[in-house]
Structures are given as structure tokens and as C-alpha cells.
Length: 149
Ligand SMILES: [Zn+2]
Ligand SMILES: [Zn+2]
Image 1 (cartoon, rainbow, N blue to C red):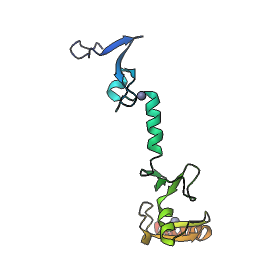
Image 2: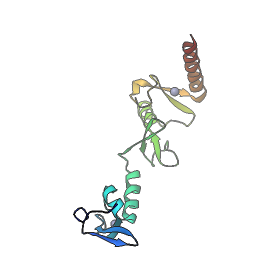
Image 3: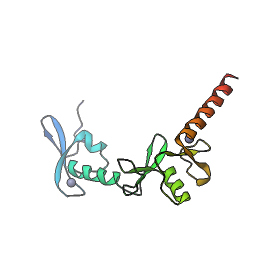
Image 4: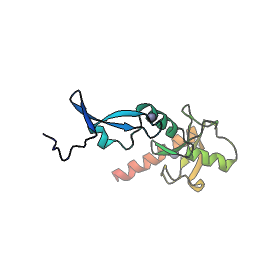
């Protein structure tokens, strides 16, 4: 398909059969080429280097929330309860605050209403690993019974 000369933006130059526009990175100000395809897809014209820095920073934002397996997490690398990536489950943070101490890895936090995102302290129950597994076992048993009844 021919791109009509009316539609084609003069800022694109043909390099190796592809159209490129020269744009300036909003972070470092460096000029770099962006293909015609990417030009209309990109949300910002950050250069590769600056986008890497940007996403790394975004990932380390302590105010940002993360979702993994339906749970809400925060980046808190200084917290002893954080995992290797520095992330910590919100329900564990809430429970630790309620108890006034850090939770041990053997202590599980259960969501009473089954909603993993409802991290209100009233919805949380501290259990040992075995108690927690037993509880979920009985919940599943019950559901199975209801399903077949
Ligand atoms: Zn840049
Ligand atoms: Zn549970």
C-alpha cells in the first residue's frame, strides 16, 4: 500500500526500506531514531537507555502497589518480611502492624472472606502453616460437598 504524500509526515526519512523519525528523548535530550510503526505506538520517546532506567525506578517505587497471584504487594526491601525481590504482601504488613511485631515465615495470614485484596485487619487471621492448610482443606471439602449436593 502506498502512503499518500498528503498523509506522510515529512519528519520521516527512509533508512534501509523503513521510515524513521528523529525524536528527542525527554529525559536525556539525546536524538534517536524511531521507526514509523513505533512512532505511533510509543507512549513516550525515551531512548532505550532512559526507558530501562525509568522502568527500574518505577519498579522500585515504594508507593507503588504490585499484584501477584491476586495479592497486593509493596516494595519494602528494608522490611525483614520482604522476599528476595524486596516485595512484601500487604496482608502481612497489616497483620504485623496489628500485632506490633514482624511475622515469622511459619506464620500465615488468612483472608476470612476469601478476598485476597481485602486487607482490612478485621478480615485477617493469623494461623500456623498447618492450621492454614487444614482450614483451606476444610473449605475445599465443604465446597466439594456443596457442588455435588
Ligand atoms: Zn534518553
Ligand atoms: Zn487462607
